[in-house]
Image (cartoon, rainbow, N blue to C red; front, side):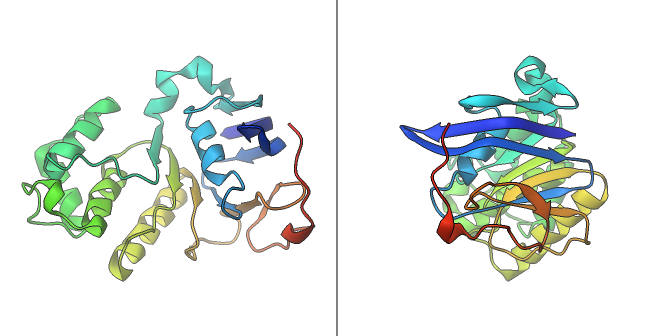
Length: 229
């Protein structure tokens, strides 16, 4: 389980959110919502251990993530705004390195199969600088097929994808959650998850809190006041 207790984060002098609590259990997805600058990416980065919150604690399997260190990162797959693809390397080489960085060894055959499923069969040995932005995004998304991480944290994963890739990614996320995985993501894309699997968190709300997907927020964003960290 992923747990957040009394979390507060700021950017510069501005408090983005404060006293935030949430719990995410196996088989659940948390959809972060909010306007630009509301703190969505900041929260994702805090969940990944990439920045220290102003206050509060993040726990994984009951332990603070800073105490778990590498054990937490092995359980985590993070895809941010940048695809993390090196242009001078091939798709095969990029994914081979990505797997090794998290202590997982994947065969070239497994990597090739992942690229084929993501729609890049035959592109394995092509330098990624020769790929379109959408194709580079597909290479990054192939990590989802190669990862055994139970926790996925995805920042706008559907951006720059065509219709076919959007459908495939939606299928991968749904399968991950249905298999007992956890996911936290930001997206404007509709997700095909069963009732009870998806939770929403709107950071524009006056008092952001986790609610079942589709439930009305108690306070509209227009009346939101700035939080105090």
